Image 1 (cartoon, rainbow, N blue to C red):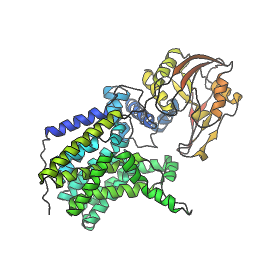
Image 2: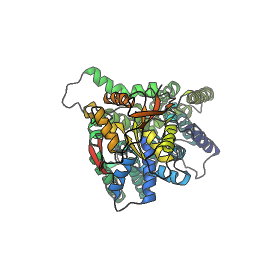
Image 3: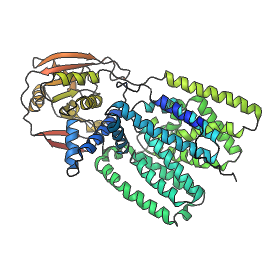
Image 4: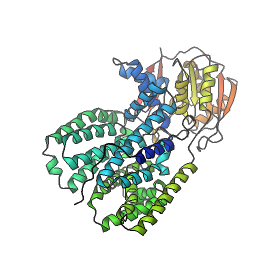
Length: 542
């Protein structure tokens, strides 16, 4: 049996330096509002929505407030995505100002807490040096660092899962009820950060089974109270997800639907995340060291690695089962792989020459990863904040129509730059057409010709129209709309160049037109088709 390590309540200077390095890497480009990633704009707006909700406190008309807010700023994903990360964003927005920088600082706060939890966990099972080294390997992995440059939920949910895993391990180690209660609350908050984090329950059950403790745990009062607490606190999220996320669920949950699938397809599915691990998630040196660490742990029959191996296994099984696949979904297993990469140094530390060689190689590996981070380009697109400012300065009425791919960031800037929150943003991909992110079968066209286009702009009292010069929405009717913008019904006021390394936004211009046929608002309702959540909203405009 291995002796459990005692953990000091005071952290060494090396950990504080590691945390400083993590913050430094994640906060690259802080203050540069051109950095952006698909979906990150929605999460930014979710944070602003929660901020405004807490300011206004519309407790007697929550639903009406929400749909009116979405009608004004149609770039929310609240309901489709859980609100815990946006809540923390809102706190930072309220304290530091409603800016992209304050939202990114909220994300970094999550990561630092997760880093401390990981350090404490590995310290308890191995030692401080192994904990620090595994943390540094994880924190300097380029694939991990890049998610700190945008307001995505990947690092917050990973960090929450690390905190949850720490407290669950403490419970298995001590049998103290307070750790199970802490784990229960953290598990709930983790799932309220991103629903897919529910898979860590599989990890914990497997670990209890592996240790032969599952039946014993099920006889304990704190376990049943903790499970009841989780059930009560997660039921609202489950109801919201079933209400607004049916399409997402149907497109994500696996199964072949009774169809015969080829062996090639099965192999593609089974190997997908391992290929992503080698080619995209880990650098090759870390991958090599992790494989060496796994081999040595088997050679030494080290039972301490079981907790981490089962975490890897649970991640692989759960996300391989889902139909929707992306390398970022399995970020959860990267800290464990980085631990295995640190274990050769731990196992061979008693042997001078192997230790010296491994130390040199690990220093080179960390240096290589830092170099890769500095070489990695953040995604960006300029011009959308400039366009929003131009609209605010030149529009005769608070109603702007936007037609383009990067609609979320334009909407975000309209909200953050409009101090009085007067302006409505109307989106072409809601009023001229609509579609689901994942399914072409959900595409629909709501305006078919010039007369329909004119009717939409007239009834909503539109003055300025902002359109990306190239149609990247993917529906042909938006090309027809761009042709209409070149007619005598419009005056081109300005063209703002977009500088971007995102394929859909390269060589774009933001063309701002004045609609010369503008009339007072006459529409009683704003009808928004939302196939991604299976809803059609009719929002009163008067």
